[in-house]
Image (cartoon, rainbow, N blue to C red; front, side, top):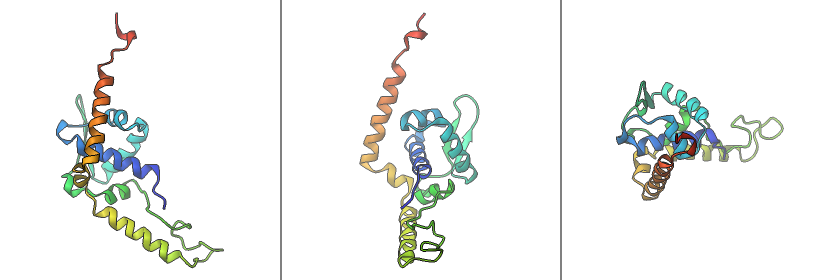
Length: 159
């Protein structure tokens, strides 16, 4: 199966937004710090997420991103689809040219698996992920780490 970094990072970033829903607009820098995802990569992903109406941007001081609708209405498959990611278990990229330009014996099996995975992800909302105790524990750890890092004053800033 092929779900690349793009899809994984998009889901992670959207889950971060959902977890911090009550904090107002969330900056990509905050998501970058918490999740260890490059800021420039997040900018590319969020451009696609915004074009697909999954997030809205808030400009100005204190700006950032918000989910465009309730967590219960945003599903993992929508996020993956929004960043042009494919869920593909075939060896041919779904093209049907797996074996010397023709379909292999198991082509339809792997296509069906891809469809099942997409269907599975279509049933998982951000709300269900936010409610997961393991996700909450990880988010709490990340928030503590970010808060601890924010409290450290670099020596170069002391006059």
